Structure formats: structure tokens, C-alpha cells
Length: 230
Image (cartoon, rainbow, N blue to C red; front, top):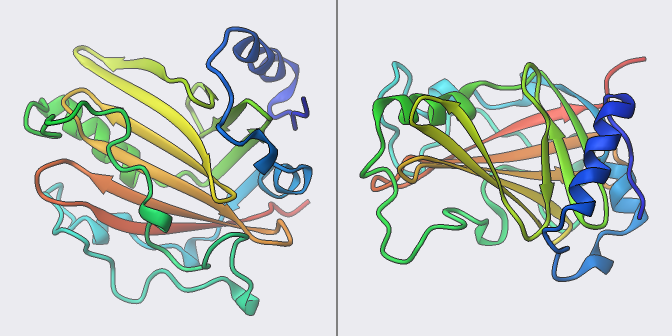
């Protein structure tokens, strides 16, 4: 198994522990090639000028978003015209995404969400991380956002984390069409889905974000990252 370590020995040890604790691998392990691991893993820094404004996309002011809305002028394609491997360089959810992954049939997302859960969901969507650390292996992904405990996610499994009183987040990772898909669902059913799409040269990362509070459709926008300067 090949792992690109992030945040030193402590995080590497946690990743190995997660592997040993189960949560089977992706359906097609062979799809995660060494080249894809190299392109996606490591440190990333936000390119604010080429990223969408999530508050604008969600309507601002903390209100509910209009379905399918994207901010004007945002979401420019990758410079040089080279899209991420397996898909286009622009925003929007690729291949149908995994919106609502893990929900039971007939479950109405958002209907039972408490205000604290809705606030947590919105923070996940609009709290644009200025840096990212990603580690990819045959059977798990590690995604580290600033000021958060890293998400160590076995493919095919799930991780649940408490964010406060009566607020839980269930996270899942999938590997689909050469893309890492991170789905986080809060108590009551609201979902934030992030699809990580590295460029062929591994210098650019497009993150397509879908915010789905439930019952009113979803909103899509994107973040763009590059490798940090030495």
C-alpha cells in the first residue's frame, strides 16, 4: 500500500490505524494509480481569484439558496485548457456525484434539521479552506482542513463525528472516475459533497462543491487550488 504522508508521523500513524481497523476498499482498487496518487496528494493553497464566492452562491445573509444557483463570473476553467483527468475543468457535479449518499429511501433531508445542524452545514459549505492537505492510499483517503482534526476515511466505510450538542456529521469517501468524492451529512439530512479533481500535471486542484440542505434543491460552486510556493 502506498501512502503520501501529511502532517508528519502522527497523521501517518492514524492513517495506518484506520487501514487496520477495516472499512473495505473501493470497488475498483486498480483505478487508484500511482500517478493519480501523486497528482492529488500533498499540500494545496487556495486560488481565491479563480474560486467562486460561496456566500454569493448561497444567496448571502444566511438564507436558503436557490436551487442550482451559481455566482455570476465564477467558476472559470483551468488555465491552459487542461481539464482534470477523467472530466472537465469547470464546476458542477461530475457524473451525478453522490448527493445524499447514505440516506435511507424515503428520507427527507433537511426536514428534521435543527438550527444548529443547519448552521454547521452552512459553515462546511461556505468556510472556504485556504489550505488543504490530502493523502490518498489504496483503501483510504485522509483530508485535512485547517483547524480541524483530519478526516481519515476508509473507502466503503463511514466516520461519524460530533460537532456539538445534538449535531453529528457522517462522512464518507468514494473514488469514482479518477476523482475523490467526500460527502458529509449532518443530523437531519443536509449534505455537503466535495469532488476533488486534480489536473493532469498535478499542479491544480478543482473542488466542485454541492450544498444540499434538503427539500429545496442544491447549489453548486467551485474552489480552485494550486501548489503552495516553496
